[in-house]
Image (cartoon, rainbow, N blue to C red):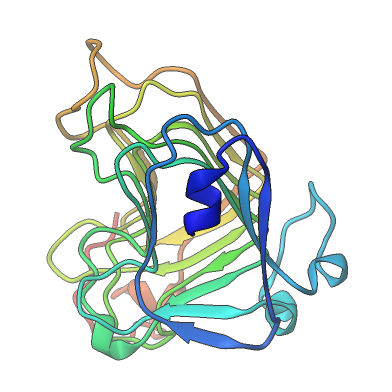
Length: 239
């Protein structure tokens, strides 16, 4: 918001009522000189698991719901030079009208931002990221981590699925790090965590560096597997 942009040395909290629902794409604007944080969190944070403990679907009642209803549009989109945003205790999803999302539901950088414009210091904490919860809605990536100093922790990422293209719980290909992916449950039909695989806009040669992945549970849904009776009949890209 304007206050956060004007007072970048201060920490600002945006407290969102649990159980409330909001629809749209919410951009994280530039804060290129920020030393303080903007924290967007559930009003029921004290009722959610403490830091270091993973959320589950049963925690949704203590989260606000923020959803995309426009085809291809993310819920949160970090713009160039977005700095120091932390999202805590949010239910981030999409309606069927938003399908297909061919970038990500949470887009921490688009992969085209260079050294001077790449977002940084972005954290997704104890949140649930998922598609509309049916067998037809397509979401290529739950979270894109094309940002420096970026973390996804203690969260639940579900239902990344697409027909004809790879889907990923987390995807990152253009960052100088560090990245932290810790204590999450991550579901994707194709690749649960994808690092690299595309050209990078930041300087440096070779693979991503300074990436920590630990204590995550990586899994797939039976309905994606066409070789078992639970298959839902869609030709998902499965790996």
